[in-house]
Image (cartoon, rainbow, N blue to C red; front, top):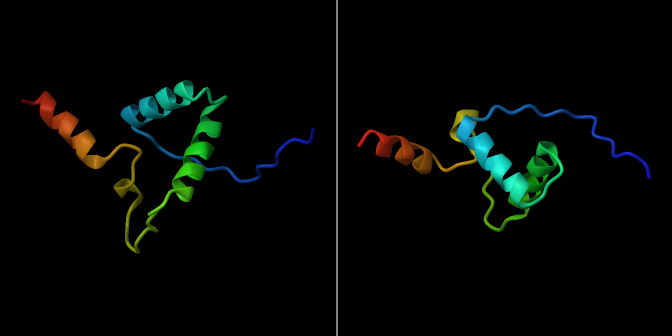
Length: 80
């Protein structure tokens, strides 16, 4: 069987919470690697109905695996 050719490398930065969410999903779905899990999530995301394309001027920090309100809400609850 011929090896898959993947000549492009994509590097992303994740918060500890985002990495934990990715790892939990990966293990739950029995994905063989982080790369495989990320590729599967990208495939699913791109195939989803209602996928919105990025608007001009959007920064990479505006995108995350977890919703911003979930992250901000969790931080807000700790201070209460």
